[in-house]
Length: 114
Figure 1 (cartoon, rainbow, N blue to C red):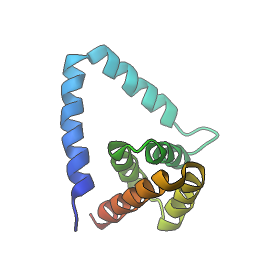
Figure 2: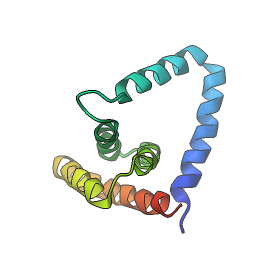
Figure 3: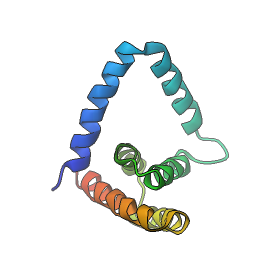
Figure 4: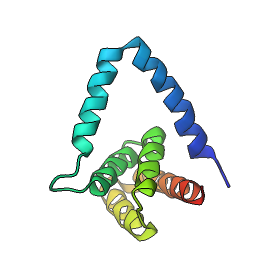
């Protein structure tokens, strides 16, 4: 099993922990915003995580891909749900999104194995 995304999210979490110490008010605000945005409402938490993943893929953010795929696996996403969302991301973002959609699939395979 590859551990690229497990390692990446772990390393980023450690660095983000340092930012919590260095800029606590900013990080508290970000965490509060994230919590509020992810609450179930008209859209489920899974749907919201799919949107976040799509933005991360389109924005070419490997850290975003890792964290949101990890959250989606914990929420019980199926491969079929993931690939349909990635299909929309590729449609809207073209070739660069295709490359990062492949990254998201690698992260899904990795986190699904653990």
